[in-house]
Length: 296
Image (tube, rainbow, N blue to C red; front, top):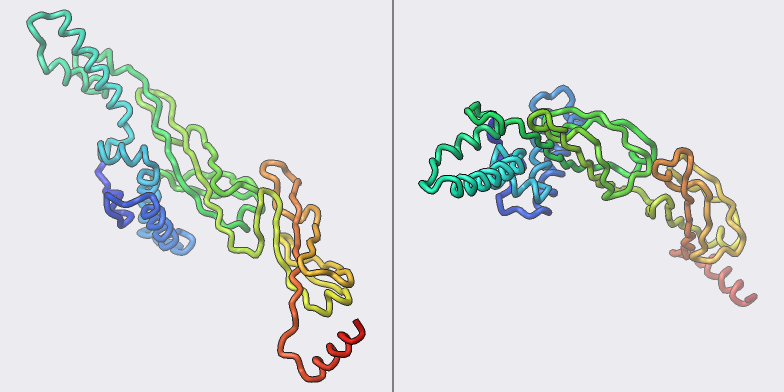
């Protein structure tokens, strides 16, 4: 595996903060996303590199391993374990031979841990679990109103996953066995996906419940009438009661957000009325309001 400078891929320095890395990743991911660059092989290749770089640098533990071991960062744990066994082996050799030891013993031992093919091949049978991978997926709130499938590119591999409706912002799910490959037939690591949900709607979300504010003109608030409300699954017409006060809240049962992993269950939609006072009144309108004030 050739060395890839992940810092250079994201266009950040080695001293970049997590915030700097996240900002650079989001900008580049949008720029080179396959949906925006159809049939562009270069953009697709760049998008994969960006995701791979983010997978490493956005995770503090992976970043440290990468800084310490470069292209071999995925085997950092294996290297550390092998060095520990070297030290233990060295201690046993020192106790057994008063005349010292040969440094070549340890290089042979280290090689055997990674299939170097020395006379101490028995150590190469050690099994290691693969490295866990971490990825971040950005979605719009509207996208997670229904369950859907999505193809992710992680470590240059395409993985098809189902994203359940109602997933939470910041939630992490595990895809078992889709991490790094195990050593010596050891089990693969897992893939952990963190969801970053962007809300560009007029709704505020609190778990499965939604909240929004609807403007109401003074006349409709006083006399009553109909108002049309936008929801995630279509428009709803509501009856406004006469003499509705500013700040009045009404609930639309079952018109909220899907409950995570509970098919067919939804939260509620809460609507708060904001009564708007008319402006730029004509002389006639002012006169009528004065007459109304006298009656009150």
